[in-house]
Image 1: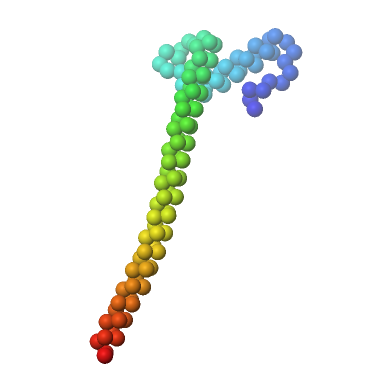
Image 2: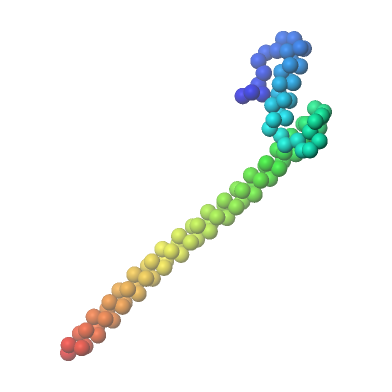
Length: 106
């Protein structure tokens, strides 16, 4: 993971690593039109908002997926039911037509 830092022994190394992480965060988080100069705080707040939006989008997508899976199960059951009914109707139709053939010959 790129956020995990190796053991940093000097304050300079720590600041350099923090700067690198913030630059990576800037490349991930949509900053908006006034993105020329951002403070660390504003970047972190935007990152937090971005995460919340992503989580909300994921929640909505999961809800939609669950709904579609339920609908698919319902439609499959209905299709199976219609197939059984069609088979029954086909067999009834062939019985009726064979009954007519028998009566025509008699």
